[in-house]
Each structure stands twice: as C-alpha cells, then as structure tokens.
Length: 142
Image: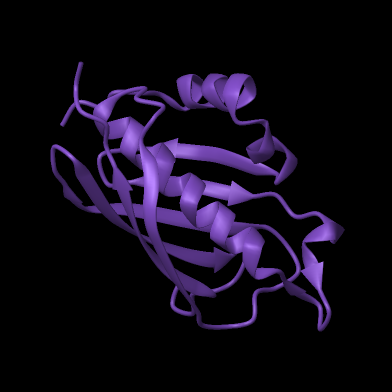
C-alpha cells in the first residue's frame, strides 16, 4: 500500500489549518501501513478532579489520530469530516502522555471506519485507557 501523506505533511496541515491540535498538545509520531500513532503530550490542564486525564482530551486524540490515518490513505483531502465518534473509557489514565493507536477497519469511496486504542505512556498496552471507533465522510472526488 502506498501511503499518501507523511508525518511532515500532516504537521504542515495542522500548523496552517488546525491550530487547536497544537493547543491540545497533539503530536503525530508515526504513519505506517499498519496505522497511525499519535500522542497527546501531557499538560497539567489535561487533569480533571480525581487526577485523571479529561475525556475531551482523549476524544480529541482519537479523532485527530483517525483524521491522520484517513489522510495517509486518501491524501490531503482536508474536507474529510467526522460523522460518528464513539468512545469507551476503560481504565483511569496515568497523569502523563496518552498515546493513540489508530487502525483502519474499512475504507470506502465515501466513508472510512476505524478504531483507535488509547494507552497511558509507560502503561501496559494490555490495559488500554479507552477504545474508540470513528466514521468519517469522504467528499466526492472532483
């Protein structure tokens, strides 16, 4: 499979058009045939009462990882948009970086479906902190 976008190209799109990803501390680490690895770099502002990472941070990481995964498969089609995101919070994340591992389940002409497993950095991959599925709408080719 030919990858259609690099980490550097994704980072350029983010810096130009998606500055909220930078504000959230999101960093794309790897794009490969197997999927995408993205990190939410820890900030004290991520914590909610109880000392756990806030859900919106984990949802944002899952959504951004899925977006990077789709662009890696179809190229820089910036108008691909989330149509559904479902997340299950499984375990309390450690106060630290959260890593998202995104994998494509189905890539069609108009829809893409993937899953994203979230882990605490330094925690066990056998004990994910959350699991999400996402569907994206892909605009028609022009």
